[in-house]
Length: 199
Ligand SMILES: C[S@@+](CC[C@H](N)C(=O)[O-])C[C@H]1O[C@@H](n2cnc3c(N)ncnc32)[C@H](O)[C@@H]1O
Image 1: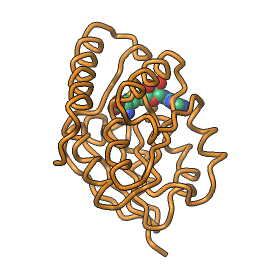
Image 2: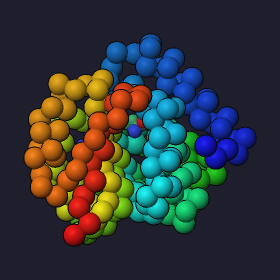
Image 3: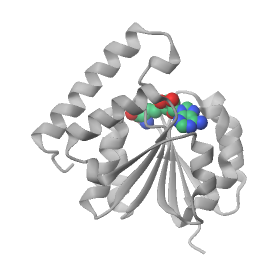
Image 4: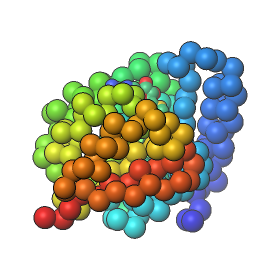
């Protein structure tokens, strides 16, 4: 694992603590951070670097914890991250965290509904997509997700084991798609990997 700068590492640790305390204290979903685990952050960092994914899309920013891992990795290989979030409250938190992170130049934070961002994105616009949003929406987003992911690109979906039943309809769609090869990685909350055929 490449070492983060001390200040970035300190910010990640601060957000981990904030997420644990905040999410433990509120049952209201729109106010919970629902961050990925550190293990998942490390995994995403390795995947972005190993696949040389310079154009990364994240669906579901929250307060930007996972974005920091993606942006650190993308920035190190000359890339950047587009991340979309529809909650004004969370966009505000993420924006402040990105400003503190030293990674803001590698992050484009889009305040919008993910479906609208997907619809206006070009064919093959992204090398890598991290999907961590409203799981019931995923089947309806599938045609757009597969359109905007370039041939050879990688889709990673969080909560593949923690919320396996909720994800099952989407997993069935992706697994049945002749263009995609899938693998379930059981770290963190479970990551579904789906790579799109190169041609
Ligand atoms: C699980 S949280 C993301 C956590 C974040 N990836 C992290 O690990 O730090 C899911 C986020 O998706 C957002 N969201 C849900 N539906 C959305 C939609 N249709 N468009 C944009 N954002 C959405 C929620 O507001 C929430 O902040």
